Amino acid sequence: MRAWTEHQAVVDAMASIPSIAPIIHIMKCSPKAIGMASETLRNTFDKHNPEKGSIVKQALDVQLIQFMLTLLEKDIPGAENQTAVKAQLVNALKSMVKDMQYGESVRLILDDSNIWNAYRDQRHDLFLTHETIKGYITGPVSGTKGYLTAGPANVTLSSAPPPVSDDLFGD
Image (cartoon, rainbow, N blue to C red; front, side, top):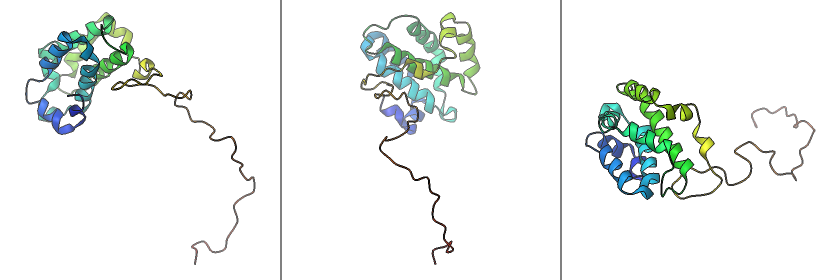
């Protein structure tokens, strides 16, 4: 299902049928699936198009926001990478808040949560690791931390200006 939610047409179709409750059921019955399910939720809410139906309303109706907050509050049994899973959950919650019709309801629930205060202003890259784990956000494998580097050290650059040509257009 995670791969499906990378496609807009699938997310649009999910909005027209009850699709959030089964994801919660999977997360509760199989804690090892919480990682994939959290990525599915992030994809879903990132691509959500309110004109096709409201997945955010579904989330409110089945108390997904409260469930996600409880996952943020504790260790997630069976999750290979706790921090990456929590980063996915945080991103999904932040995407839900952006919904024009139901985002304010989500924000009110989040504002009432003590645990959300710890996650509200954090960026997901603070949770990234240097390990590569299939299906999860991971940080850079090299030690560059995503910064621009100087490039190869053996390149010599000329200090002379480029040649001047009278023929500007190559005629």
